[in-house]
Amino acid sequence: MPYDKSLDESLFSQNWEGERDRLTVSIFSYNKGAKKMQITREKKDAQGDLKFAKMGRLNKEELEAILPFIQEALNQM
Image (cartoon, rainbow, N blue to C red):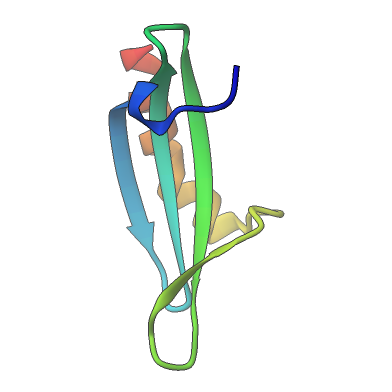
């Protein structure tokens, strides 16, 4: 069965924005299935527009910023 966006339900989402990046911690449930946490990164280009980027590694500032979001997401799961 191929992925169907209409079956993907967003249950929680919090953003942290730094100078050049935005990190988002979200909880999704696909087709009323198990709740799963997702962390995404978007990078700002020269014009300030956000573009999807590989998550990669987190520095200490980023981790400290999203840790409360991760805890909140865990409490909602």
